[in-house]
Length: 332
Figure 1 (tube, rainbow, N blue to C red):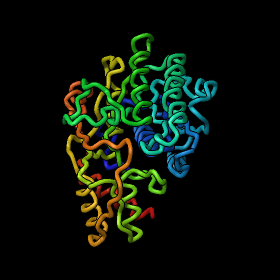
Figure 2: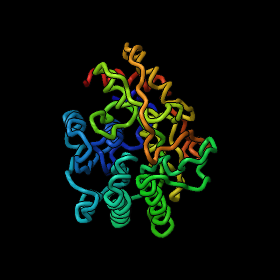
Figure 3: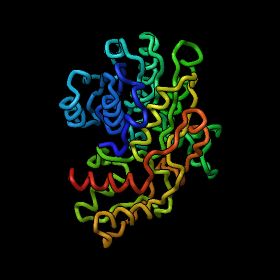
């Protein structure tokens, strides 16, 4: 359920083309798959459904028919990767294990899926003659440097195994672009939120977790004092950045590019806004001990995104939050 009219933004740039979306049944991947289908492309979704909802792609299949192919499998399966990548002009690599706290608990599994898996995707794309791979990088690469806003030229400083795997993926993207006839773009997402984000995991992202609690009549839980801030970014903005990167007429050469709104919101402010939107202002947050690996503040500099991709946010925070809260109200 995009807010954006993708055709008005991207016209016929993707019509008749074929793309692979890894993790395409997941939160961001399903929105990206939906946009590509709306734009007239054929989409292959590769997903192991370990953290995805099959209903996301079932709805798309019912609407778009044979232009959508859904394949259940792992990005660690090299033979399968070769099959699904064949004939694709682009690969949107969204498949990964998320969650900073979970990565602290099982770091080696994260390294295998996120780091090694990205290398496998890149190599399959190289062998298939793909034009460009868009990689879902993460603002967690910046670590806890107090300097704001975060600029892509800053040194990386991952504070969790999850962040480290995303930095490794960026490095592989740059290396493949340098060594092979495969262009790549590493899009550093800043706290993406929106409809279809899983609220039922123990590691749910904050907006999804707040929605679940408030709709159940419970006080939302904040880790730490709540004054930590985030550049919350509605999912349509991430989709738009991916589409702009795919369309780029100049090589991107593995460049790291921030994808965000360029505005900071504290977790305390978020809790108040969501409680008001859901008509439960009396449900004040409950504070517990902060979590290992979390960063204090996050805010993106978007100059490179504008210069390299022509990117500006297409949905602001308040509009995106209202649409997201409405979706959770209907879904739960």
